[in-house]
Image (cartoon, rainbow, N blue to C red; front, side, top):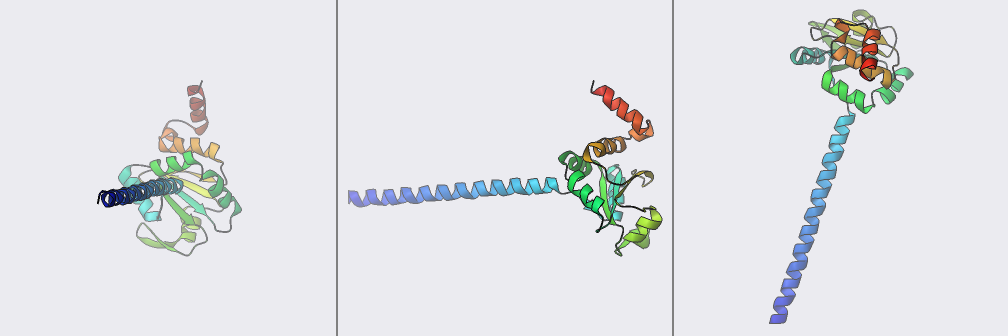
Length: 186
């Protein structure tokens, strides 16, 4: 009888031990999954349709970045692979800008001030984009601040993003801003 009780306790202990191990495995996997999900979210830029980006800009009082690209553009791919994958660039864009990605060769319909346009027509007629990639910066009232044509590496793109986001363009030329930043670091 005592041997039977000890055997049951041993089986029960083994069973509980297996349950604890299984729970630990489940918890550890869910933590890894949460980390991977967070990591993936941090790597993704929050692109919005054109009209939604403009609305977000007004509501949140942040500038809009319009990224004009083409699927067959090598410099666009280089910009996306090198500049837009930079962690600091992604963080600054996701936190400080309303983002819209517009394919300059697309016939997808977009609403602009209540009128239907294709993305290619917005590129060519509304923003006069004639080369890809091109970035247009707009303020929260959807007024144009500046455009930035061509490939820009991340080390040059970061100060531009700060210059626009923090409204330095209202007081300083970009060169003056760079000098201010350089003097701050001394």
